[in-house]
Amino acid sequence: MQISVIGLGYLGAVHAASMAKLGHDVVGVDVDADRVDALAAGKAPFFEPGLDELLTEVTGTGRLTVSTDLADVAAAQVHFVCVGTPQRTDGQAADLTAVDAAFSDLVEHLAHGAVVVGKSTVPVGTAQRLADQMAAARPDALLAWNPEFLREGFAVQDTLRPDRLVYGVADGAAGERATAALDGVYAALLADGVPRIVADYPTAELVKVAANSFLATKISFINAMAELCEAAGGDVARLADAIGYDARIGRRFLNAGLGFGGGCLPKDIRAFRARAEELGAGDAVAFLGEVDAINTRRRARMVDLAVEVLGGMVESAEVTVLGAAFKPDSDDVRDSPALDVAARLAELGAVVTVHDPQAIDNARAKQPHLHYERDLEAALAGADALLVLTEWEQYRELDPERAGTLVAQRTVLDGRNALSRSAWTAAGWQYRALGRR
Ligand code: UGA
Image (cartoon, helix red, strand yellow):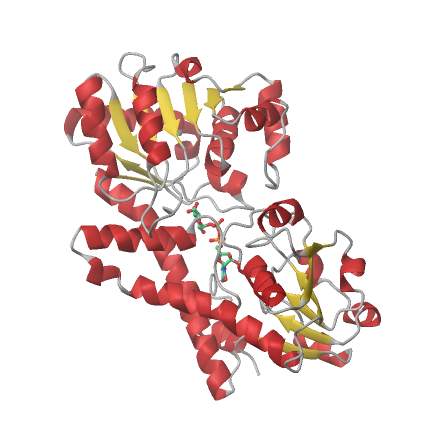
């Protein structure tokens, strides 16, 4: 099929490349010329395992072309809108400027009977509003909402082998036509047995924020238990293992530590609350305020712990922070708990050196006053305290004996419960972690 993808950020770039991999002819459009140039050369504009290889393949076969000119989408039968919906600068709600602009610009370029598919995460009610606008301008065109569930670090596999496909469509014949178009796009996935759920617009929009809210709640639940463990002298990692064996609870997303960050979970739960308030249903998701508060308290707790192990002498203390990305296998530092803690310690007067295998450039752009070190051993040299704040594999594999010969003080704070406590203490380290004695 002829497909267009509007917005080539995280979601759009991966979606465009993956749809080309499925055999469609895809044109991707973005306003950012540098991003488009990189993609045209088969280079992902961000770190995502497997994406460079996929881009090289699909730009090489000609299945994927990219452009800054929206007019280039005119031949497509199905258009995916993948632009960002960040948190508004003046509040908690989502900023829909890019979505609204993409839809109004796209309407000018639609072929007869084209299907426009929203993938961006939007406040419930947006799809119906856009459908009404589109119907007024182009009654022949159709709208569907098809939320995306990909995780950074696993984006390609999540797109090519998703857990489920969700279509939000209009009632009646229009909805059937939109469903048939999406079935055509995803035919290979459906043939592989990927479950498909067809719903109305509000349900499809809510599925996305409900899923992210559940995940955020699960993380904050275990972090609340970490607070209890700290107060009572328990061990949250053991607790998570024990409750996780109950299949109804499950062990995934029960890793206590510094909490969630990134471009999705934090802003999605805030936007969901804001939208629920507008709908007069704020009480139903008021608990998400608590989820958010538990999450940010973890960062403050980590700073306090660092101050404690430094004996209160933070001024000029040498602190090494391992990890700047909001999670491993990503160079994304949006709302990164690790970078936030590093910045707070620097504000308190510590000399903070940050290491990250991929995120240093992005971190430096956001927090230019911190010291950055690309060599791990050089980053460890002379540290009074070592903070492991993003659980990259290379940090899990650190040899505590070797690391101990480089630092000034063998003090490690494990912000992600990612290290072997017994191995580090056996090597003479003072080991501290969130939610553990
Ligand atoms: C999240 C969702 O997992 C995806 O399903 C969704 O599609 C995506 O948002 C989105 O809305 O686009 P992502 O932001 O890539 O994906 O990151 P996650 O893997 O969900 O991790 C989020 C944060 O939670 C990270 O900071 C991670 O370190 C933290 N986390 C995760 C924990 O603190 N504990 C855990 O047990 C798991």
